[in-house]
Picture 1: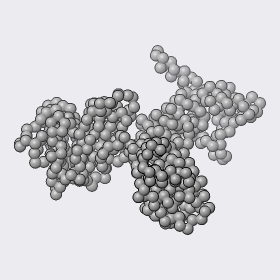
Picture 2 (picture 1 turned 180 degrees about the vertical axis):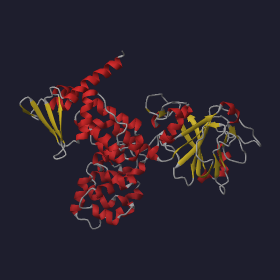
Picture 3 (picture 1 turned 90 degrees about the horizontal axis):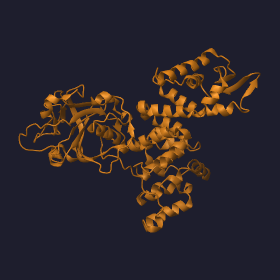
Picture 4 (picture 1 turned 30 degrees about the vertical axis):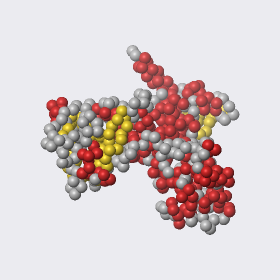
Length: 511
C-alpha cells in the first residue's frame, strides 16, 4: 500500500466523524433565519484546521451551553460553509463543476476562516483551469482579490491581465465599478502602457460616478466622450469639489501629472481645486523648466515593456506561439517569452503588394491573419523557420522544413489561452513541401494550400486546405482576410528560463 493510499484512507476515516456526529461539541449556526442551517462539528478538528477557529473557539466569541459550544456565522452561505467544513474533515474540495461565483465565495470563505493552503489551492486552480472566466469577469474578480491581503496571487494575475492584454478596460463601463482598492492597485503600476491623460480621464469619470452628489450629472451629460469632462463642472459648488476630492484622495497622488503633455492641460485646469497645490506647482514647473536634475524624483512614464506592436496579436498569444516554436507542453507567460516578435509588415498600412519587399530573406517569420466576417473572431497563421524566409526567384520550388507549423486561435482578449487553439505541424511524408515561395503572391504553407494568402486587395481571399499539415486548423477551406501581419522572430539573448508559465489545457496540441 502506497503512502498516497494510506493518506486517502485516513482522510476517509476522519471524514466519517462529520457524517456520524460522534462526540460533536460545537454547533455552528450559518446564514440568516429563516434560511440558516446548523452544523455539528468537533472543536479539536476545527481548531487544528483553521486559524480562525483556533482563536474563536478559545475566546469569548463562542458561548457554551453545558458541554456544547454554540457559534454563529450569519455572513456565510450554508452551502459554502458545508463545502469548507467537509474539506476541513477530509481534505477534499471539488471545484470542477462549480461556477465562478461559487468558487469566489469559497475563496472568500477560506480567507475569512484563515485556511491558508485552501486559499492557495483555489487561486491556483482559477488561474490554471478557469482563466477564461477570470478574463471575462476581470473587474469582479479584481475587486474581491484586491480587498483581501491573502489573495495577492489572484490580484496580481488580474492586474497582469489588464496591463498586458486589456488596458482599454480603463475606458469601459465596467471600469466604473472598480473598488477603490483595485483602482489604487492599478494606478500604482509602472507598466500600464497608456497615455497618462487617458488614465486621468478615466479616474475622473470613476471619481464622479462614485461620488453620490455628482454621479447623476455625469450620466446625464457626458455619455461616452471624455472630452465633456472639461465643461462638466461649471455649475458645481465648492461642496461638490470637496466631495470629489474626498473620493479621489488616494488616487490623485498616483496620477503622473508631469507626463500629461502641456497641450492637454485643459483637462486638468477645470479640476485644479481637487489637486494639492504643491502637486500643481510641481507639474507646471516641470513643463516650464523641463526634465532638469531638480526633478529626478519624478516618476517615469508608464511603459509596458512586453507589449507587442500588433493590431491583431496580444503579448500572451505571442507567448503561446513561442511555446509552439520550442515544442513546450506548457505555455510561456509574456514575461518568460524567450522570443521577440518584431513587426515587419501590416497589410492595411503597407499595402499587400509590399509583402515580398519587406519580408523576403529576413530569417524566421510568423504570419498572423484576421479572418473577415467571422463570428468566432478567428486568427489563422503560420511559422516559417527558414533563415531565407520568403525568397523571390521566379518559379521557386517548394522548400522543406520540419520546424514549421500553421495554427488558428481566438482573437478575443477574453479567451487568450489555448483552449480554442488548433495547431498543425507538417506531416513527415510532406516535409519537403512545407514552404512555397510565390514571387507574385503571398505566403504559402504546403501544397493544399494548407495556408495561403492572396496579396491582391481587390480579392482578399485565403485558403486553409488540409494536406501537408495535420490536422485541419479551420472548419472552412476558404476565407476572406480583413488584415494580416508578418513578424520577424528573434531569440532574446538575455532570456533566462524560469517557471513563470501558464498551464496548458490541451496537451494534444503538441502531439
